[in-house]
Image (cartoon, rainbow, N blue to C red; front, side):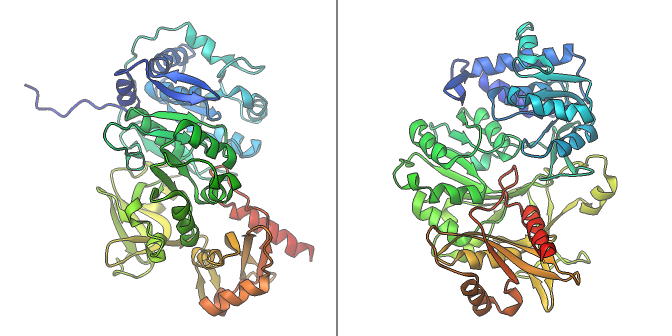
Length: 514
C-alpha cells in the first residue's frame, strides 16, 4: 500500500474530472448558446493538442486578447493543461499598454477573440509574436477552432508542474514596465467561499465583468461544483437585471461601483431578483451607506471579499454580518480566512496592537511567487514569508479586519493624513450623494490638496458648499476638500474600479488651464 502523498493535480485537471460526471449537462451560456460539460471538456483537449501542434509547450506564455466567450475559458484551460503560463489582457487598456504587456511577458502565442481582431493587428505591429491564433474566422492569424477540430478529444495528460507559473496577472492601467503578478499552479485556489450553495442546489453564476479578473476564478469554482455560468459581454444594469430574472441567477460578483449602478437602475424595483442567494462584492473600497441600501434592496445576500492578486483571499464578511444598523461592521472586510495569517505593522516592521492603524501584512499558501522579471520589487513586498499589501488597516477586538486606505492613495496634508475611503464614506452618507471618489492633487507648490468627484442623485440641488460644511462638521477642516467636482458618472478601470488616475489627470489639467 502506498503511503506517499497524492499526485499533484492542477485546477484544470480537477475541473475536467468534475465535468466528466455528467457530460450532457449545460454548463456555459453566451448569447442564447449553451455549451455542455462534454463539449467543453472535449474542446479543451482538442485545443491543447492544436496548441502543441503549433509548437506551444510547457513554460511558454500564452496571452489572451478575448472577451467573455466560452472559448476564452477553454483556451485558458488548454494552455494551462500543457503547462503554459497564461496572461489575460484587460480589453479596455490602450493598444500601447497591451503591446507593452505582450512584449514584456514574452508571449509565444496570442489568442484573439474575433471581436478584437483589429486590436490584435495594432498590438502585433509594435510587439510581434511568433503565433497569432483566433477563436473563429478573422482577417488576422489562424483559426484555432478549425485547428482544434482536426485533433483528438482523447484526454491529454497535464504537462504542468506545481512550481510552474500558471498565471501572470497585471494591475490596472499598466504603462511602461508592467507589474505582472506570478501565481504558480500549486497556488491557484478557486474562490469557493464566494460560490457556496446549499446541498443539492448547484450555483447559477452570472458573469458580467471581465473574465480576466475575479469572474474567471469564480467561474472555475462554479464549474467544479456542478453549477452553470451565464456570460454577458459587459456590464449593463438593465441586461443584468433581466438576466437574473430570466435565468434565475443565484450568484453574482460585482465591484462596488457596479453594484451601486445595479440598485440605482429603475428596473431594479420591478425585476424579480428573489433567486439571488449571493452577491459577492470586492476589488475596491465600498461605502457602508450604499451597502446598507443594497441590503434593503436585495435582501441578506451580500458577501464582501477582500483579497489581492499578490495575496489571494484574505478575509470575508458573510451575509450574516451585513447589518444595515451596524455601519462599523459594514465598513470592515470581515474575518480573516482559515489558513491565512494577518499582522498589522508599522513602517519599521513592528506588530501593532489591536485597533491601531498600520500596513496589512499577510502570510498564506496563496502568496504570489513574485513579480514577473522584477526581483527588486518582489523583495520589497515579500519579506520573511510575509506579503506587505500596501493597504492600511486595523484589526478590532473581535477579529474583524478593516481596510482604511491604500498607502499610495492616502493624502498627506498639513496637520496629518487624510484617508480617502473615510472621506468617501462620509460624502456617500449624504442622502443626495450616490457615489464619490477622493484623491490627492498637487498644487503649484507641490503640496497635496484633497479633491472629490461626486455623483448625485438625479434632480439633486446639493452644492459643493453644503458638502464642505458636512465634512468640516464631521471630520474637521483637515478633511475638507479643496475642490469638489460634480460628475454624471465616475470613470472606471477595465476591472470596474474607480479610475482615480484619470480623475487626477483631469483635475491637474483643469489647474493648468487656470
